[in-house]
Length: 163
Image (tube, rainbow, N blue to C red):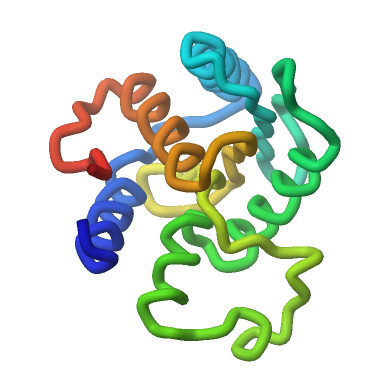
């Protein structure tokens, strides 16, 4: 699949996977589903759900480390600053042959343009937080979040799945 095709699908994911409402109970449900999906795959995953600048769900499975916490923080910062999934943002930079630090004058110690963080948006488009994971290759980090969100929201993966 080309970068252009991935970017189109990620844009569709970001348009489709929105919530009518999102609160701490929603975060718990999604977080526990992410944890179960990771356990089923035998994947070491750190999971963070942040809403309004406040962590409302956090979990780390066996095999993770403080390094995963740092990746979560940096990916989440990317979503909260640029209002796009960290994977989509990173692919756009790659597509445009743009260097993140040169263009945005932001340190890589605070931002990561790698897959794994996805914006929490309400139906009208307002972004209220981010769902972030770390522990798998970046494309897989992105995919596990999208799959869990689609299932939670009752959406099929038709047209949303990255090949």
